[in-house]
Length: 393
Ligand code: NAD
Image 1 (cartoon, rainbow, N blue to C red):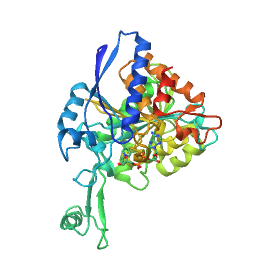
Image 2 (tube, protein in one colour):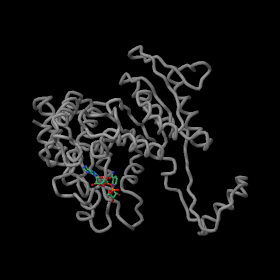
Image 3 (tube, rainbow, N blue to C red):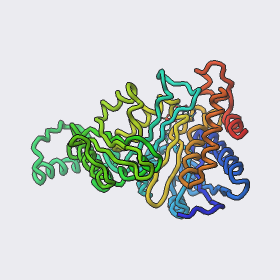
Image 4 (cartoon, protein in one colour):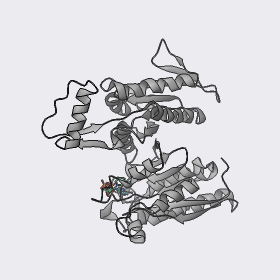
């Protein structure tokens, strides 16, 4: 893929604190690109609309216009602030709609500690992991019913009569959810994760699942994941299930292993250095992302991306924080570091490195927004825009 030096990047400002954090992100990313490339490379920002702003521009009840998805497809990239999920109107979540509409199957969440960040654990500096969360399947596919309805009764009858499922004894009132997990969906995610391990010279890939209980979905995820390891040339260690692969680029040994999700949530607290790159299903990935983010400063500073074959959307991982919206108060760290991921995705690594170093120095200097200042001794309180300007400086 050839990335032009003059690049148009669509952005969605986002609802709530989007109005605070998104302009801060643009200021920092523009400054990093200018400093790294001295005018030879440039980003032109193109505003596209979703959420409340789409509603104002395109008319009532238009939360995610087709034009927005078309422009992301056209430019293959976008960055977005948080979006409020409208109540009613049949929309489960704008974010989910966007991920499904563009088949952004990989939710990428790097978890990295910045020195000086307040943390509830003793050694947050030991936490350095990258989560690949499957983004399109699992219980989040949104296939669910209320059992009292006629449709649900039909499903129960079908499962009993056609599929031979014997043990269905639903009480009168209950919800039913279906959890699809496919070989193709699993393997494209695990391939992306293992390729990341190779390209970034990381130590290991852990497949996290609940295959001991849900054998045909989570258990299959594990088996299909190990098949991908074999496809890359990995060999079983002592007859498996763990595998070993020599990194073709660096000669370093890579371990491919698996862990049961509940035990894994203990493990990341007890032995964080044992884990590196993680590949997991949608729901596990949701829990693990926030549990790990909490150890390194929380959602205010955790970046994220949703990546597919045709497009990638980089996004703040937090919500719209309505209580502090429009007050120039919110921490813009999450969307700024998502911008850093975007620069890296484009191959603009010099600018990406400048952003990471500058965020790192700003936090180490204890010039921080209110969420960090509250618990950090000797901190200087900064507004959203001041914090962004400190990073630029
Ligand atoms: P939230 O992330 O908005 O807020 C949770 C807590 O974290 C609040 O106390 C908030 O003030 C604080 N917080 C969040 N971001 C912060 C930041 N950058 N700096 C400082 N403090 C910050 O989650 P919520 O309250 O559950 O959700 C509010 C709305 O956001 C809902 O409509 C929800 O649907 C939406 N939401 C959107 C996304 C997204 O677009 N990716 C993600 C989560 C929630």
